[in-house]
Image 1 (tube, rainbow, N blue to C red):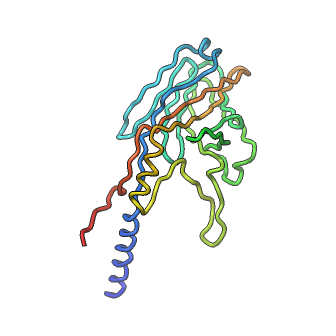
Image 2: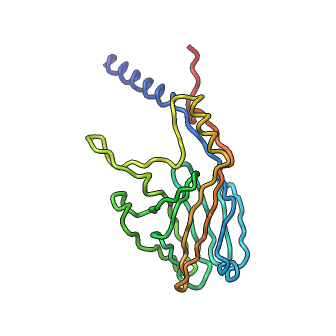
Image 3: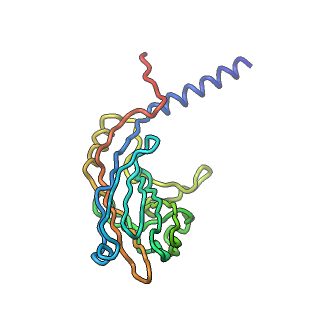
Length: 219
């Protein structure tokens, strides 16, 4: 029994040590600007962007007379909640949506509810009824891949580097992303008219540190 307890303690210590040997990157991603078609500006008025902190999490509110969208971008995916402010249904036309990375390359996206195996198949639009809301996520489809074998399965790469066991190199790599921008093209269809909203996000800052709960041990 004592030997089993020693082995258990040893395994816990090994797991803790190697888990804390990994450095993590934390990105400050802000909603910088929104581009709309001229027709949308004339029909749905001026736009407003607001930054709000709720329970330690920064959220970015975009609003015009057509929609209110709350954005929560992270290094792994871009989450949002959209409210339809009109008296008509709005469709999010996913097959025409896109993610533009920090190098200016455009990528097809998938959203919540799409099976990873169907990531390259056509996606039906999401319908938001008048006055209704929808919560969803945006992931570039080419970030998803399959690993074969006993411990395989579907995997998802992050949008930016997130972990490393080497501090100096990783810190330099992460800092290269500061000042870069990414974009989300979200086509919103209302009354048979597709309005292309382009949301530009900027990586305002980034830092590398140990995960929460890790402590430094002096040998």
